[in-house]
Length: 146
Picture 1 (spheres, rainbow, N blue to C red):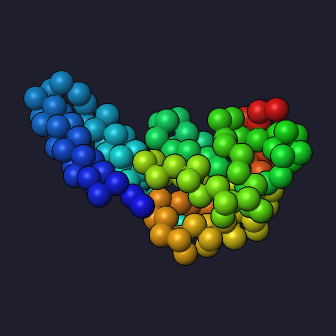
Picture 2: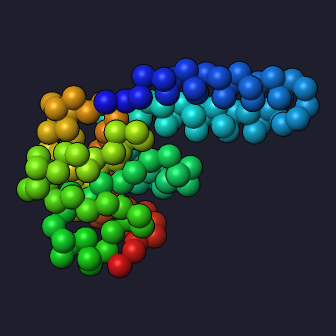
């Protein structure tokens, strides 16, 4: 359920940045960084690593949906993650954002993989699964909220 105009917007932003670089308003390295970020956000792969997710979170353009149970979430979660336990996902589909890419996470990536299949089977095309789950997130030394 990706916004059909998102790709066009990305192309317009890219063209603007390219013209800005040519005029000297921004540097080539800045254009390349923004182009990579815009491209990554417009087309997330089915699986992302914890490090890739951390970089995407810095852009503010992705939403993390944690599909674990409430007690697991309370014990530690990715900052800003929305809790929608896998068991209630079907009844709460309307809470899954469709205006931004969504990355699903659980403890080890089993439940988030199931959530990924559930959502893509229902027409969501803006979802990815974080490989390794919170185990991998914590092993990478990334921030955990409580």
